Length: 112
Length: 114
Image (cartoon, rainbow over all chains, first blue to last red):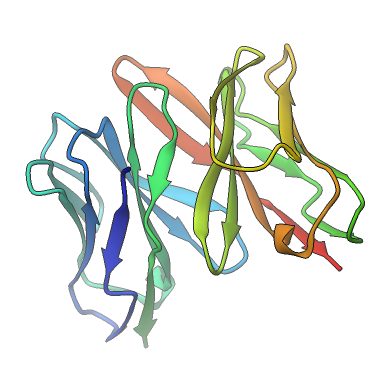
């Protein structure tokens, strides 16, 4: 059974810092990995999707990497801003057309 | 292009009642998935519909059911509500671009069972 964990559970940083969020999964046979952002009480916003054949994806200040063999993905946020404060969720897709298995999330607070 | 629309946004129901939630996917998306989010269990997969057929199902009791219509809109029904069904219910629609399946989520329906 695929299990996804995220470290740390919560993180508080001053504005301007670069930071790394970690995601681990137990079964390396994944199809896609997707990072999401969730603001309190709201739905999920897709940030980055990495196919299993890819090593990383970038969008603006965000960079996500994937190491399937070790069952790890990292989300790197450069020059953090207070608007980045949210919960960040990592999700792995088990196969083509299959559902996602989500991690518990990392709650990020960026202090002005 | 409109996003995924879920209605209603908030619901308060009494134990024992039933409830129906609605999800309209992004135009052109044929796959709709439902997830339950609670503070204790996080996000858990309920079921997925593709072209009006349930393609995948999570580990939830039979009180949770769904369906998809020919226009890809989906409904989720929960019968005989229990206090533990209080949660944020999220719907996701997916599109396939070659090998890529990317999910887009709605704002969710907050269900409170009292």
